[in-house]
Image (cartoon, rainbow, N blue to C red; front, side):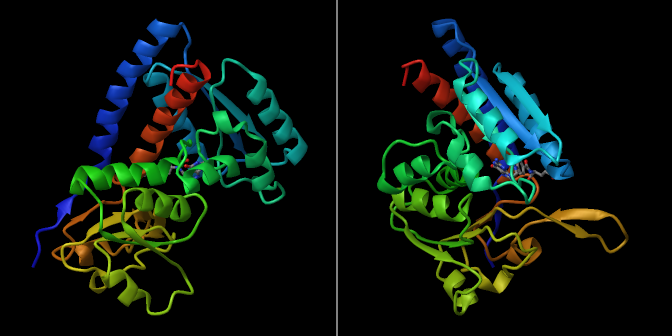
Length: 291
Ligand SMILES: Nc1nc2c(c(=O)[nH]1)N[C@@H](CN(C=O)c1ccc(C(=O)N[C@@H](CCC(=O)O)C(=O)O)cc1)CN2
């Protein structure tokens, strides 16, 4: 039986935001420029509306300017592209984020491709994905960046560790694999067609769940002592009515097996917005020629 340590992403993100607030104040004093983040929300998805509200609030708390653009669900692709182009040209805006998912009639790839790569604080533009893949400086997707920060804080050096990322999305799985490779891990990306997924997971010193399937990764898939990062945020029905959030990992079963694990909520989720603020400051520094 292993004693399982809880990785407190909420506390880590709070400390990071406090640090960033100081760095933003120093940047403003030095340059006279206030970093600005524009967030575009299309439609009325309730979870997205909460995330966008929190982004605006935390951006302002960090001393940065927040520009929110809320568009109705029936907005056309051309209208979204025109807004992104206007934000690209706006000198007060250093970071642009289009909240995902977009309504089905909008081609998300076309929208992401229109964002100026220097203002792409989500790191989803192919230019940033490519730069990350070949080891050049890039704006890095926020959730994977947050995962690696928590891992390094928990484990120190990640060099030589066997990492298994379950999930191959462009937003989390693929960029996270690139970041872990950059940390000299031996990386496997597993997915729905992987043969004997439990056996692949059992090899992992670092096991990441990023599939969006509630509690799919069971306790007996975890190698004793492994560090488990749960990126899943799944809302499920509670037995007595109402809903609760669970991750992609069966958290209760992981107790006594994993060496350390991120909870849901309060693990990886809060790191996403903290890293977004960090990317916005990085983008502003680069645009001001200070990085
Ligand atoms: N353009 C983007 N769209 C989306 C991203 C993204 O990084 N860029 N990620 C997710 C949503 N997301 C941010 O946008 C996000 C998700 C979760 C959290 C978070 O703090 N979660 C809390 C629980 C929140 C709750 O109660 O529902 C936690 O895990 O503790 C922050 C941001 C998809 N879209």
